[in-house]
Length: 247
Ligand code: NAP
Image (tube, rainbow, N blue to C red; front, top):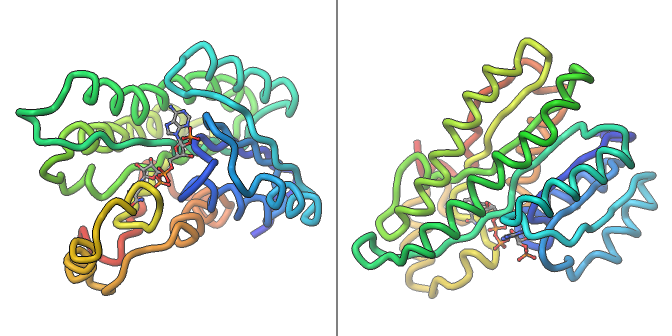
């Protein structure tokens, strides 16, 4: 796929799924802006790949739970690039625990990071997209937002909230040619899931019809598809990338 000349903004691009998405857009020639608190350990490599593909890779230090900071960074990108073509709300955290033992700060942190930041980012970019009558937003949800998961009431609430948010915003902006979709990954091998021991990993893989966990690049390819013109007639949808787990 070719994204030459397109400006892509991704939250949480420093590792895992977000880094894989950033890398795929870099390889497709885009101008990629990655937001996170820490820089990717592969930033230099990504910059080099961007140079080769004729695009740009820029990292912006930002804590997306800090609303003024997130707005300021997005404003600076909007000014520098004259618009944003694709916004990918990928950054997310877990703070697992059974509800009866869940700390209020764990509830708040997960909801602020995974859901409220998406409200802030979308609100900032939607006006310029409406003006341009083009643009697409992709929110990274989770199968847990569809199925639920014991010990993840905060996380699954945030991810289910994202699905409702996605459909509502999709309806609000569709008449202006803007598409809003969600991707719901299943079990993907990243630092978020590496805490699991081998036994838990094997037990989980047994529940997945395709019989294995997923790779960040396999989520990235779904995101690139939804961002591309090949998905021009798709909005308000959730593309589940989970090896069949949630079907
Ligand atoms: P990860 O490896 O832990 O990466 C999370 C990313 O989010 C990092 O780049 C991190 O960057 C960023 N982030 C977290 N808090 C942030 C904050 N306050 N401000 C800015 N950036 C922040 O997780 P992952 O597995 O790649 O997950 C990516 C997304 O996919 C998440 O939304 C997650 O819920 C979703 N997902 C993952 C799986 C899975 O199995 N891995 C399954 C379903 C859904 P810094 O720490 O540098 O800020």
